Each structure stands twice: as structure tokens, then as C-alpha cells.
Length: 259
Image: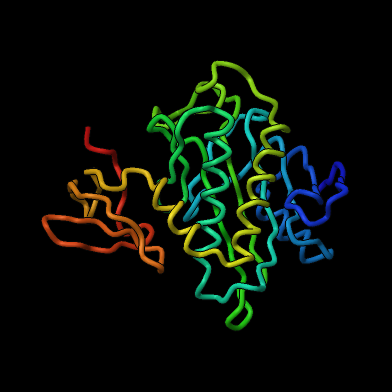
């Protein structure tokens, strides 16, 4: 792993104050984990790259990204204040930060699509991969991978979009990264203060499709359901044929909202 440079900002308390840049890597999550096993790194260390050879999404899905076009970064967190059964709050915190970044930079309403995507204009603009390492009943450390489409103009799928397409202009990826770090710092501070109620309320306020009918793939069949919200285990609650059912990640696949 070739590290181009480190940067230490004046404020050591913020996410992104300690930064590692790689021109290319297989995965920022994997590279940051490897670096952390060999060196002492502060809470909030950020690693970013111009290109990922093997970028991953949730459950080993592949993240599509052109070189130097998008924000590809990972964050090291040391959330020792969280119990192992409180991992969901990291997802809530990170999703809210990335959602607010997209909305602020695009000027268009952005939403959190369960479990780990950010949607804008009914298309995916960002994805999150969270990997927790536990020690007993505590979270020893967390590596958070973030992929945000910034300047890419074409995608294999028609369900993806970028900030450039939304804004009709190219953006400075470094400015986008700094905005993400600022938002992450804000919501991580709220998480440290255990402001559960406000975080939970905000998450549901911006949950994509909440209260609406949508189509899902369930047990190989297309079904219609109303999106109700999440429980504290992170399961999605849906109203299907007048019955409330809960689903974990990968137990059901979102297709689209009912128009």
C-alpha cells in the first residue's frame, strides 16, 4: 500500500483532521484496516482515494466508480461509548450526515433508503458500508466506507445519479469530502452525547418512501407494501396485505416506489 501523504489539521477532534490519501487502492476499507493494525490512528481518521480497484457495497456488492470522478473514502471510528447491541446508531448517524451533505450541495431533497443508500431525485447517489469489530460487549472500532457520486455523468444502471448531474456543473471533490467530514463530525458529536430521540426522529423523517406504497421482491415474487419505518434492531417494517412484517437486510429487496 503506497501512501501519498498524511495531513494533520489544527483541530484534532474533528473527523477528517487526520487524513491519508492513496492514489489507488483495492478498497479504502481494507487499506484503512491494514494501516490501523500496524499504526496508532486517532478517532476520525479518514482515508480517501482517486480510484478503488475492488470497491465494495453492502453484502459484497460492487460500487461502480470512474477514476477521479467521485468521493471514495473510509473513516475510522473508535465508538467505545457504544455497546455491541447499539451498532444501529452508527448507521443512523452516518446516513444522516451523508444525506444532509447531498441535500446541501445539490439543493434538492435527499433521503435515506434502507438500509444504507442515499437517494436524490429517486435515484441512488451514495452508499455506505459499515464494518464493526467487537470486543466483548463493546465496539472496539468501526470502519465506515462511503461512496458518493460527484462528477460521473454516465452509469451502467439508470437508477444512479451524481451531484454533477443534479447541479449541471462539476464540483471539487475535495470540497465535497470536507463537507462530508463536517457533517459526520456534527452527527457523531450528537451520537456521543447519546441524543437518541432526535437522531431517530430525523432518520424517520428522511426515510425514503416512508408512509408510501412501494414494490419489493420477496421470496422471488413482486409484492406491494407500505413502508412504515424501522425498529431498534434495524429491521424494516412493512404493511403487506394488511399485516405488519419486519425484514432484516437482504431478506427483501426494494424495487421502486409506486407512482
